[in-house]
Length: 155
Image 1: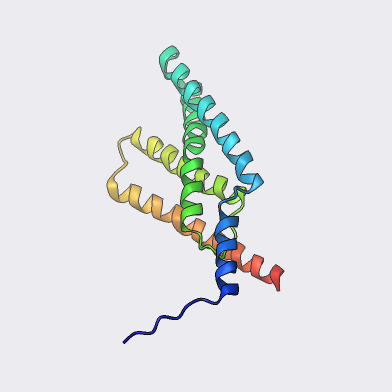
Image 2: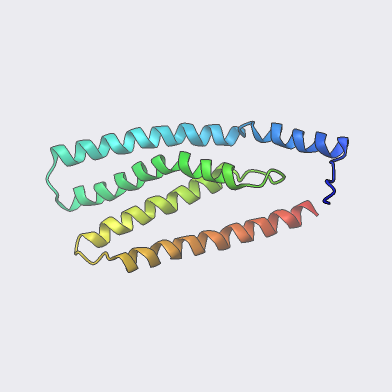
């Protein structure tokens, strides 16, 4: 027979308050999402204008990569925020908006690097995999260091 351990009323109230507080969106996330919308609209509209109205000379190619970075980063921010909110444990603080923007910048940089490597047709699946893996490892070490700094401040 298994005995179920019922949570104490105080523990249950604490868990409910954590869940209720996790439903609230931090103020910096609101600003990040507004900036993401502006980046998304500006980047994709700029790319549309660039591709439909200009020839691919050197300046336009650099502008293409800049606009791809802006558009993809702006598009990735809501998804990266969702993943951070979804997979952050209930008891932990949500990552600040700067972390979400940085992680979205990695996504944009990956797409720009893939587009750059596709010009001379050297982008292969293993190269894309190791490029993505390198960005993931860098972000992992940055987050690991940030968490260590946060825990030292809390003590």
